[in-house]
Length: 198
Image (cartoon, rainbow, N blue to C red):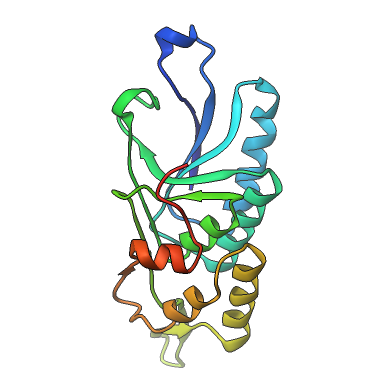
């Protein structure tokens, strides 16, 4: 996942002093939570940085996503499922619909305020990882491994701690890992995952 600062607002109106938000884009891996903390640490003293993250991700590693969510919560960040268009500015129509799929949902959960605009998409499926096993004939088998019950239970506890219904986790575990279940507005409300606007 990459992070960048984005000027948010009409540059002609704020004379180069526009508020800034963080655009977070890409796959979440084991290095992501520390990379986010380092990024915030480098920019926290600018006086222009607001605790808002534009989140756009296809997913990644579940445990790392939970850690990223906890980092969002520590700084009181609001997360918006959105991305920045060409030009790199939040001005005008440059904030576009985003996606938050798979493990990204667990990062989203951690934000103090969570927003998923109607045109953005949030999707879940059963957790899995690939494990390579080397056979005696030096060939390797790649096997899909599903989450253990303790990890699923831990995710359920994490969801509740972040104010989200753990029903979302149980639903995700029923969705074929080769599909994405797009969370409906009704589910979004029922599970207390996000609102459609600030």
